[in-house]
Image (tube, rainbow, N blue to C red; front, side):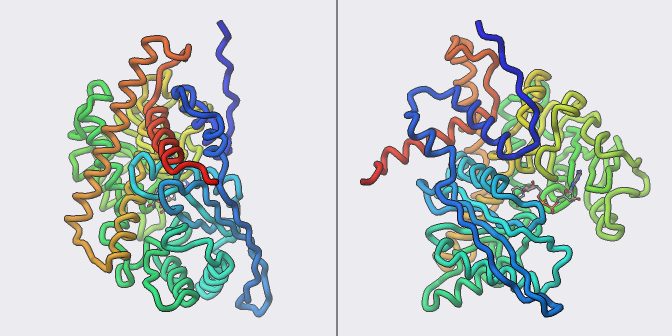
Amino acid sequence: MDMPTRLEESVDLFVNANRQFEQALTWIDGIKVGIIDYLINPKRTMHVRFPVNMDDESIRTFHGFRVLHNRVRGPGKGGIRYHPNVTEAEVAALAAFMTWKTAVVDIPFGGGKGGVVCNPKELSRGELRRVTRRFVAELGDAIGPHTDIPAPDVYTDAQTMAWIYDTFDLMHPGQNNLAVVTGKPLEIGGSVGREEATARGSLYATEQLLKRGVVPGLETLDGARVAVQGYGNVGATAARLFQEAGARIVAVSDSRGGICDDSGLDAEQVLAHKNECGSVVGLPTSTDISNADLLAHDCDILIPAALECQIREDNAANVKARLIVEAANGPLTAVADKIAQEKNIVVLPDIVANSGGVVVSYFEWVQNLENQQWDIDKVDRKLRNKMLRAIDDTVDRWIALCKRHKDGFNGNRVGPTLRDAALVTAIERIATVVLQRDIWP
Ligand code: NAD
C-alpha cells in the first residue's frame, strides 16, 4: 500500500482551494475528466488598468480585475474587494468558492469575484468614488443583472455598491438596472436583513448541524461556549446572534488582540466598547488575551470570522473546540483541515457556513427584478429554509460518503469531511447542469 503523502503547508488561498477541490474529487466517481478540467479554472479573467484623477491633481493608474469562475447555473455572483495585496490568484480562489457556495445552497447563480489593488485607508471618499466609477466603466458589459453581479467584500460597502449601480445605470439607460449589484443601501433596492445575513445564516446552519447529531455530545447551542475570531460585520453579529440563541460567548478578538471571560461576555457591550475604543481589547471585567490564545481558548465552538489561513499547521493542534464554524472564507489551510480531522474536530465548511450572505443577495436580486420589497420575516424565513436544506443535503451526503468509506471505496485512507460532502454536492450539481445544457456546438 502507498504511504500517505504528507501535505506541505501553504498559506496561499488558491493552493488551499485547489487542494480542497482535489480532495473532494477523490469521493466522486464517474465524472468526466474534461468536466473537472473545465471546473477547476475560471471561465474568464478580465484585467483592467485605468487612470484616476487624485485630489492633489496628479493622475494615478489603478489595476483591477474581475474573475468569472463559472456561470452554468446562472449569472456570476461575488464581491469586489479593495486591498493593496489583492492578487488575481486570491480573487480566482474566492470566485471558485462562490461557484461551490451558490451550488451547495442551491441558488441560481455561478461564481465570480473582483478586486482593485489599492489601499482604501489612504484614499479620500472622492478618490474612492472615482476609482469605483471608472472601474465599472472599464468592466463595461462584463457585469450585468444576467451576466455577473458584484457585491461588497473587504473594504467595499453599501455606498460602493450605490456608485456601481449608478454608473452602470447611466451606461444602460431606459431599463431596470437595480439587479446589477447587491448589497445596496435600502433606499435604492437593498434588501432588509442583508447586513446580518451571513452571521444569521451561520447561526441557522450551526443549529441544524447540532440537531443532526454531527458533533457528539453537543446537540444545541444552549449553554455552548463560543469563541469568535474577528469582530467586524460577521464576527460581531455572530456573537450577538449566538448569544441570543443561548450560547455563552467566552472569548472574542480583532486585529489588535482578544479578550475572554468564561462567565460570558455581552456581545452588545463588546461592540459598544469596540466602537468607542477601536478594539475589543481592554473591555472592563474581561481579561486581555493574544490572538493565538483566542484560537486555543477552551470552548465548544470556534467561529473564525476574520481572514483566510488563520488556522494553520503551527496552531491547529492547539484548538480545543469541538466544532469550527467557518464564517470567514478559507480560514483553515488544508494541513489544518487534516489536523482538525485527526483531532475529531468537526469543521462546518465556509461554502455552507457563510453562505447566508449570498442567499440574501439572491433575495435582493429577485426583489429588484420584480420591483418588490419583502419584509424581514419573509427574508428570515426563506433564509432559514435555505440554510437548513443546505445542512441537510451536506449531512446526508456525508453519511452516504462515510458508508462508502466503510465499504472501502476508492481506497481512501481517511474518512470524508463535511467539506468533502459539501464540495461533492456542489460539483455534482454543476456537472449535472453542464451535461443537461449540453456543450455547444
Ligand atoms: P470586516 O472587515 O467587517 O471584519 C473583519 C474583522 O477581522 C475585523 O474586526 C478585524 O479587526 C478582524 N481581524 C483582522 N485580522 C485579524 C486577526 N489576525 N485576528 C483577529 N481578528 C482579525 O469583515 P467581514 O465582512 O466581517 O468579513 C469577515 C470574513 O467573513 C471574511 O473572510 C469575509 O470574506 C467573510 N465573509 C463575509 C461576508 C459578509 O457578508 N460580510 C460573507 C461571506 C464571507
